[in-house]
Length: 311
Image (cartoon, rainbow, N blue to C red; front, side):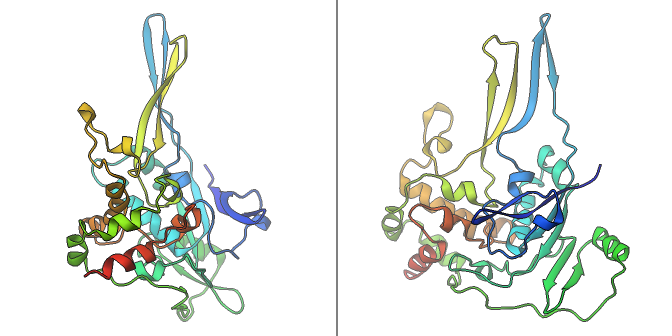
């Protein structure tokens, strides 16, 4: 089966990752796409089981996942977001649906040449694509691109194109207009109960827009949808968010993080402390989608800056 090309496409005044019918529609001239590769590798409303009831017998069917995605034109932050997803979805027990899509994917990264006020990839060490996450990495030059391979598949493509090795390209540094202060993890952990969190959380509407836009969030729920005549149904995985009260509810009706401030700050502790301690990388790649999608424009740079002032 051939690859389905997923690339940044200009749609009106925004860029969207979608299927490219022709190379002419692909644009590399963008700062941030509205969506991310997560929409394809870990899609919302992912059907994981179907069933039919006929002749007093239940027939089960697990949908076959055969898609092969070639992601072309990802920026480093979005490529690294896939690496973050891999840490969660491919550790034991491996998520079979994510794994089926991920193992067949091709990732071609195009380096950034500019950023805006929302970008902070340099603050979370995500300015360049991490080793093992990309097949090809393209760096724009004054004329053309310098190409670096990151996998055997990438080497194969370079050979097929008849390209020759050259000197490594110079990567632009300091493109972010703003930076997050360095996070002392031990000090950050001790600030969990600091009063500053109450003040910062007052602006949050708990709408979940930030997490719906986030390329690294993996929270989900599983629901069963059944026909009215009970003849057939399906089990669907849908995106969810730890910012929602009902998500923190456990058996017996106990709510683990009842107060809004607890759910607000959990996001930051998960992204910048718990994930770092467990996997050695931040659970955020600084793409800025959370800020651009937030009705109140709550900015992680501002939040972390205010919190770290109390160290």
